[in-house]
Length: 212
Image 1 (cartoon, one colour):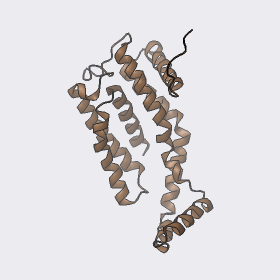
Image 2: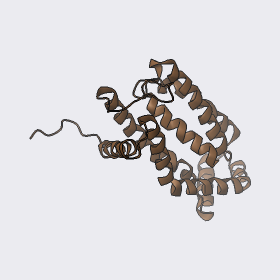
Image 3: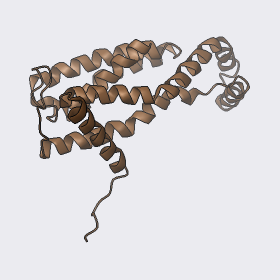
Image 4: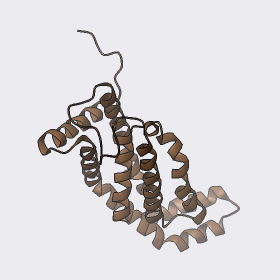
């Protein structure tokens, strides 16, 4: 029995996602594109505990923002001391700045595993339609393969800016504007991704907007 030449650490997640998609498509009866939407909602539901921590962390950051700005101003000429005092302030007030990134970090393995699932769809199309809303002809095609992909990317950019607007209220203004502009530059990267992956990220952003 020949051993596989390459084993990706994402393989277990990829197989799990394929099983979930097969169940949603085969048992519930949703088309493949809507199965991705349903999968996204399931992922977001699983991430609710992390999202709650994210929201609490952001609320705490906003509440203590005046004190943190005062520390930054007091030690503006000594960046090392400023960082030490901020870390001390975080510990004393049970603030975890990294908590705001947890949902995004947790989604990245799912995002890339879904990419591999859709790449397999393009090589070996499963039974059933891969179209969506009679607009997207094939969710396994790259976003730059059809005009509908560009439409999806415009929707992605709008949803990403909206979700960033709601979830970055505690950021510095310059940093916040940067985070809202970045999705527009990220579009060139997404052009090479399957349209089903863009649907996943748009659904995630819309969930975040509703949550915000």
